[in-house]
Length: 228
Ligand code: SAH
Image (cartoon, rainbow, N blue to C red; front, side):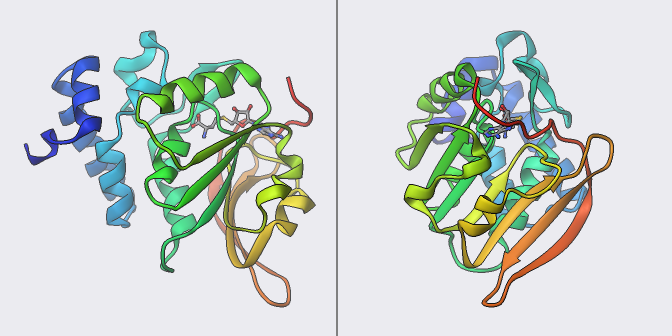
């Protein structure tokens, strides 16, 4: 019961009670069985209450390994995908300083990243979802997150280059401006392709270009243009 210390757990205890600690432990065990090896990622996901990012009606399902609706036709990514993308982004290098996230959604992935990198710059094209994310993340009191309401196609030039870029909606092709905003040596994790045929890719920018690795087949909501 060592994990009973700390803000996150006490928030979760107020939320849905002791079960959430056990269910989170189970979620972590499952993630490890699914091949997630980064211990920091597993610890942070164990200690971060996921249910506070969801509408109350769904909060009891927060720790299931499934994507769930967060409104506006969008979904919170399943825990395995959050863990996998985070692990791919962090790699084996030292701590990342600046990370750009496209698709804030409910803010759960943002909150995980904020505990693992120096600063998260997160962009969302749906204003009501951005508002929800700020409310959720506000409960956890992170100071190292900046929010932008914009079309993520253009990234966030003011703070570029980024040493990590994580995209949680799938474009047919990687937006050029996101590639340009990656630092040399930087890592981008992004699903690409049309629905039913998407692949999670890791792109590393080198001195001379970009190295692309196809990781696995995935299902994401589409990356859309403009703001709403
Ligand atoms: N990581 C989020 C995923 C939400 S779903 C979570 O777990 O909650 C994907 C999000 O990407 C949606 O909120 C959607 O509105 C957003 N999105 C899609 N296209 C975008 C774009 N061009 N710019 C910014 N956000 C975008």
